[in-house]
Length: 275
Image: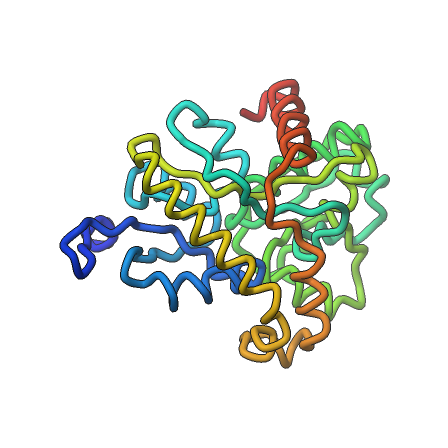
C-alpha cells in the first residue's frame, strides 16, 4: 500500500504531470523546501524521507528529482542527471555530521563503530576517514538506536542531520568529530554530501525549470535565515543564532571546487571498494 500511494501520479491545474520531488525534512534543507512548497506547489508534489529512503525512491522511480546522496549519484551516474549549480556541501565543518566516540579516534583500532541507517554518503565518508586518513581497521554496523544506547556496546556512533546537531549541543560525555572538517583538513576540498539529481527520463526543460526554482529559493532564503530559524522546530533547542550560522556555513552551490571534491570522493570510494 505504501508504494502504491507513493507512486500516485498527480497533475497540476493545467493537466500536466507534476514532477515528484524527494523532500528530506532536515534543517539543512529547510530554507529551500520552505520556498518550494509555498511558491512552486502548483508544479511539484513532495514525498518525504530520510536520505537513505529518498535515494531508494529515486532509484526505483518513485520520485523524479531529489537532493540525493552524492554516493547515490556516483553509483548510478549513468541513470541520473545532475541539476546544475546546486548541492549540499561544506568547506570544512558541516556541523550536522558527527562521529561520537568514547575514546580518541586514533584509539579506535579494531573497535565497533555504529552508523545511522539514515545515511549513505556520510557512512562512506566515515569509512574513508577511519580507514584511509587514520589507518584504522574498525568493525562497522548499521543502527537505529539512540546515541546513549548505541555507545553502551560500541566505541563510536555516526549520526547525521538534526539528531546529530541536538546530540552535539547536549554532549558532555563523548568525543565528537565533524566529518566535514576532517575531510577538509586532509584534502583541502569541499565535501559534497548531496546533489540535486534527476532520473534520466526527466527532460531538459523540466531540469531547466527546477534549476530556476532552486536558484530563486536560494536567493530568497539567504535574506530570510533569521525568520526561518525562528519558525524552525529546533529554535528552542539549538537557538536562532546557531541555526542562522549553520545555514550560512553550508555551501548550496556546485562549482569547480565541488566537482574536484566529488571526483576525489569517487576516487577514494573506488580504491576502497565502496562503490
